[in-house]
Image (cartoon, rainbow, N blue to C red):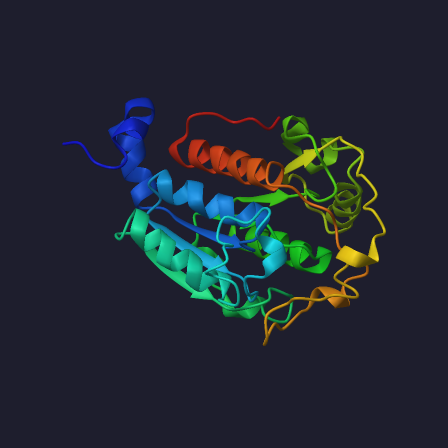
Length: 256
């Protein structure tokens, strides 16, 4: 019988679709990268998804985040995402957490309940903790490296963290993973050199913050607000889903 996943089943097969329907994925951070990750996971037939993000939709998110529209400004991203998921596939089991993931909040999550973990958050301390928690639970994880200040979506690739180069964030993560004895870590990264954003106070969040009322972590607290586009973080999110889906159904392995 035809359903919303019939075209995907033509490529993956019945058994693979059943595996996806019984899988649960946690996506930490549902902004530019994570939002498209969630979208593609749900449209691929994933059965359970956890959404972790404490942020609200901001005007400046509209250029790149799938959940950001004029209508959703000021709403929590996880609430907007959950509503959209229900419109795509009401059978998906959704858990939402308005939580900023840190080593201090890691105890709120049972990583052993997940079949896959997505790191799409911005902070290095959070990324490190996610990897360590996934490692401890024996759950596969894929991490997004720097997607900001870049213009070439075709430059992104999947690699082991120890085979990355150029990307400043990947360099930091290589060092931290080696220090902690992590042997392998699947990441999506780019060798494109980051572009330095224009120093234009007329469009600076430092001087003209438009964060919604009640925003816990305003952009004014950042040392630098990166530039972004609609066509880079979205691609990173879709690459991540390609890896998750094919890993879960056992189709291929891209990492050496």
